[in-house]
Length: 193
Image (cartoon, rainbow, N blue to C red; front, top):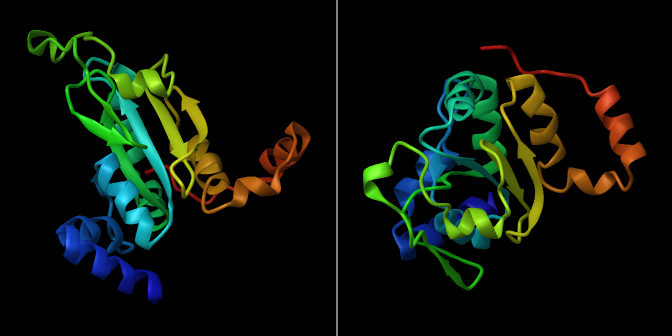
């Protein structure tokens, strides 16, 4: 498999071997999403292009915790994400410094005393215009924004979007009518646990 060979070269040069192994070497028994940083996801895209999924959350957000516990912990969701996306979990009010698309994003007004309460908004979440939590952001293989999915989603609700934004499936649907047909005829496969 050529993409894996290319990634091995990339991972050796950047020291991402363990990141790649955790992200891609999953099997049907895996029930945990292999989260990596946005910078690592973009870097891995160079050797093996995949779309990126970003979970934009905050520490104080109840629905974010439900999304982790009920949806991202679902074995079908986790396996599908691990097999088809680079997965990024990003605290939209955290203090990480992120380099993305030639810009440096940070949270200059971050208050460590408020780490588990409402804090200032991170510049990356502002750049994506995130206004509610959780928001799941889908990026294409060139790290361009495809879609922002707001709010808590069950495994079945998320399945539709995961399969829509796998590879370039979304390009098949050029209108709202096309999407509605896709949505109405969608056959759910994910289990509830």
